[in-house]
Length: 258
Ligand SMILES: [Fe+2]
Image (cartoon, rainbow, N blue to C red; front, top):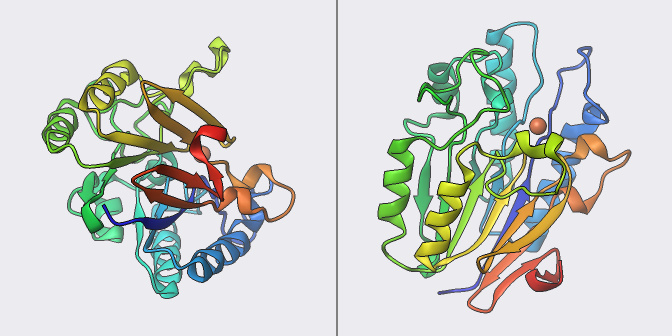
């Protein structure tokens, strides 16, 4: 595979002016611009939003405009920004409205630049298989549905070096039972699938708003933190990742040392 560099951000929770902010999230758009400029200067091939970009607007129409404006903004930096949505994308928007704003007919996807593979998962599925839509969900109950599991299994049959992106935590085991809710509810099944493939090098996830790195079954699981937890802009919330045959460099730190 050809070495590739990409940028990540997660859980911006950006509110519109005058509407309630979450933590330090009132500054998220300012931070986003700084982060995107950092990615541009680093020469990234692409960036990924790990979801929960928005806070509630006055109504769904305003929410759709906010997300649309955000996508226009991040499309102006000279590299594509791919998205895995979070639960907050579906707090006011229906599933159809989200697809219409983003222009995505299918939310989960993969792309294969330079012999590597990048997989975007959609963890916004209720246990009954229905998709999150206009607040019809419990944020603690997300799963990867049977259709995606089958698709993922097919994808991984071709064992090229692979990186996975998801909003909910595919691996999350901090030892605190109160924190278990951040984990994808069928995480064990997904983790087994990833481990059995032998080709997945790293999984990047959001949802919990804090940084964490774990190694399991030879796979590096990294939680990208949210700017809403930081009192000032931090590069920690806008990591640049280098992916090579030898592994992952995360903001310049080898994956094994995180
Ligand atoms: Fe979030």
